[in-house]
Image 1 (cartoon, rainbow, N blue to C red):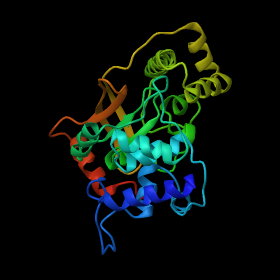
Image 2: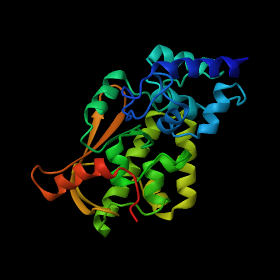
Image 3: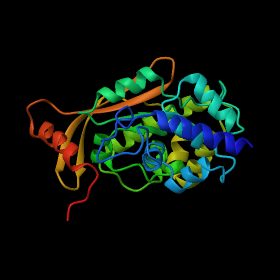
Length: 278
């Protein structure tokens, strides 16, 4: 019964979100004004097949992460998000867990930065949403699942990224990430996802375990980074991390100095998208 109600709720709210409101391009004829299943799946970072099974009531017990991702993709209000959790047979995340809710005002802010690579992370550095330019610059995250979406996990256990690092910049980044995650773990002691993340990182990375156990202290600061793009070559950009008061979110923004070749290449990212050129 709960799975049927959840599916109906997702379908009903999917129909009311336009592609434009979700920051997606509108192309070709559409039978309905709302999002297609493929578009909802892309925005939520889950498979189209899973969205279909959820809407048809054939998939029961979606995880908290899936419900949270669907809530963000559907641009739900706080009350609607709570209803979606209840429809899934889950309790909404409490005060002791890392918040993953994008308020409408934050979502509008992200929507307006269409010419800037920007992404939102939660307090544990799990990627919540990335705009098309961010995906084009640093790699398409739509296929990432579970811990792959976590920035700390990717720094210590994931594949090499596109951002260049010197040994010193790598140490600085690692120390800042571990210090921030430790603080998050202290603020949200009941969050089992953070506990699992720390356990996996300590088991899989000697470097992480050393920094965690020694209580290393650092912090994220504005910096200039060089990103090696596979088609456009190196882009040197300023990277700023903004905090959202009251929601414990991190907004990562990459900008180029106006009038430079890097600014021209950022503009080209909007044309290239995440395509791979032969």
